[in-house]
Length: 116
Length: 115
Image (cartoon, rainbow over all chains, first blue to last red; front, side, top):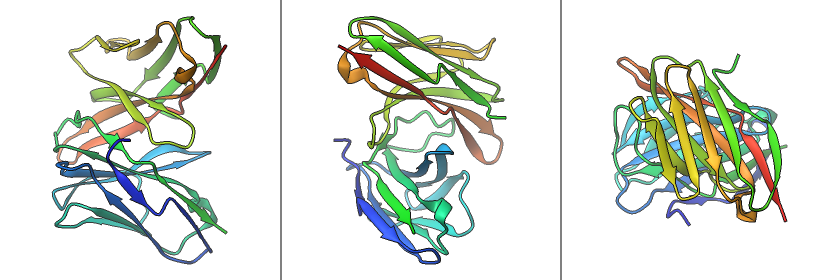
């Protein structure tokens, strides 16, 4: 158990809908990262927040957005869902933010999203 | 073309044997390279992180090497155990001025250790 929690564990929804995935980092960690993992694309980095501020952006679609709240939990919002958004979404956390990205990241168990 | 290529795509070995997984990259400018182990349906677990100046790093039975000149890394697993069966993912981070960093992921090597 990494100490990172994600809810829900599974989510089934229809195309065009909007969902929110939630992540609670390890106690004391200030950075939160979101990743998407699909069978055809593999693991992809979406976005990083540090202490409430966006710090790095990866391949995040405009239909997706995220935020980190004052209590350091984070939410990933996915809207206008398409079949291709079906994937495992992982949240990871690390203690701080290093400009060279060498902090050890601890991954949560993931949320499996199925879009029908 | 993916900037991080891993080989082999899959590998089957007998319990107790050693194996080596490869990661070749073209990412530039290089910042660091990570190896992750991912069990099926679970989140990745960090094995090693190496920066430009490091050429070997160990974590128990896992030893990663990095040759920044040839842009190659390997992950050597010694005395394999059934629990080593997993996907191993290589991730190379590039430094991006004024933006931080960009992560480049390999497709992973699927390792199966059999009794």
